[in-house]
Length: 381
Image (cartoon, rainbow, N blue to C red; front, side):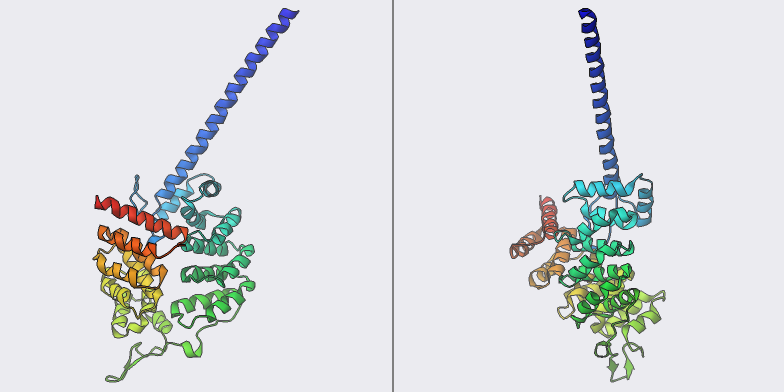
């Protein structure tokens, strides 16, 4: 009897050992499968097409980046459970890929992503453009729980990019509770150019409120040429009216450039439009706007962003001079990224000098500066 019990005990132990090995194998297989799934999504994020300005690192990838946004989105739709996998990557990676995931959720996010996107928006260490993407996405999702955070940030931020995208997000949300914040913010600034006024008006209308602009004292008045008695805007009462009349023209870019030559005071409105229409023809005027200290900071920032998009090669010295002379941090950061694209190691000292004047740079800005310096140091060797 004892012998039988011992034999049974051996068999039981043997079976338990087999079960343990099987479970370890299954666990290992699941873990490897999870890693492979994550790697598949990360590769897809790496191949995101290059976008305007310094939001994403403009580096070569292998395999190469997708040539268009449509092609990239189509590849994303073929990935199973793409939204869940994106959220998992966001939660796992404290720094890397958070910006890319935020952008991807604009196309693939549902209600499951709302809490993640609100966390992105509320995180002051995130790039302001990533926070802006989150704001617009939350608006399109009709995530009414985001109305409070968006309204609060709109009244406390000094960043024009974030504030503009927050206004767009509140408009997409369509929640009347966001109206007071949009009106209060817009009325703080007398230098709103017509492109931003249009965004405010559209947002307010979507929230069921009346338009705020144009105000009588803010309508851009056409400038009269005393010698010919003809008006710069050719009889149109405002730039908005001129834009609506000419935007469908096949030579709209040329018309914008011609208008700037006639009257540089419309630089902010013109460069706003050139974000969508600029080609190599616009390069000389974009540099004029960038170098014009009388132009608004927003116009100079957009000019720099478009030059990066067009991959324009230029001497680095004039750019370095602006970095050290401007009082606008956002413009300086856009130009620092541009210096990295130009690839001139002589600009290293300028970037280091600029970075040394700030003790509390936001994490995204530190990342841009460090990566730009590392890139230029490699070129120096």
